[in-house]
Image (cartoon, rainbow, N blue to C red; front, side, top):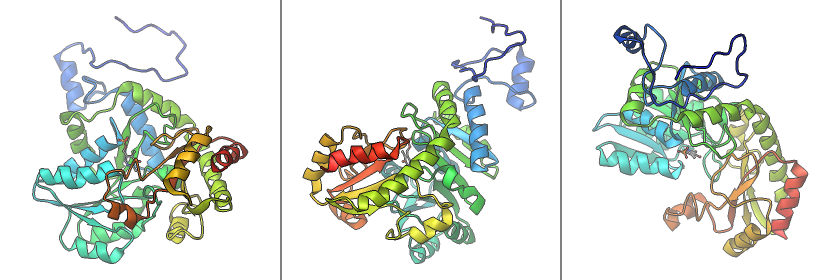
Length: 378
Ligand SMILES: *Cc1c(COP(=O)(O)O)cnc(C)c1O
């Protein structure tokens, strides 16, 4: 099949190239593409146009020299770690990471002969002590789940670099709208595009970006380990990206309003939001995040699990849906979802109680959100 002719016209919306393989005229052409002398594509697991154009847009957003897509947030974390360590090396791991990230870095990489030390990223003394063991890569999140702890990323990067350790920042909760880790020297930034950047809960995708030369090796690893993105998901993500700034602005604004409002509601024991003066990391969050504090907040109901069940049944406008970043507000329950398999002592250490609800705040009019919450709190 040949491409249709558009004459003097062109599609306004970028086309979806849903093709797993490309056609080449002869051997000289394939040599030129493999050799990098000529642009072009050969096999979609290696590269495809929808990933390439999306990666360019995301690199700009992150202030990165390069960005690379993967089939999920986990896939780009996997690729970055595999590109950074050898058997016998050591990882440094924040103790408040996304559950699957912790499992990958400790259990899975441990199985392959890569050791891990777990540290509290908000305790620089602990980090300094662990760096003596010469880890190759430190993995940390800008805003942690669910209690939204914000470590001093610039300080951590400086410390790590003094010890020859690279830093991968998972920036999913902050997004590049609030913070760009690369400008503070992080070696890699990653985002789960499954969340608010694409914003419509119809995509599973991840991006990693950086300033150095690691993209060649990463690109090989993505292809060899089969971690690539799908054209359709990249196409949807590019569409979501068009409204990202509008959505993150509205969602952060709504979250800040609700964080104040919820604090005054009967039955609410505490509110967790880095924008509140009572959050333990409010100071560092204010310095780091440009005056906004994200679209996620938590609140604790005095009545524990029973109160949470009642809230979920009554708050019809706020679906219980254990992810985040949807255009509409959703709620989740860290104790039975993200931290379901954590030991009870670990949940207690982090302050994840039975009454704790996490809200991923969307872009609805804030009065509508208050009404929906009020229904659940009744
Ligand atoms: C969702 C998430 C991930 C994993 O991303 P997937 O796209 O689900 O693979 C990693 N880190 C954080 C902070 C997340 O919220």
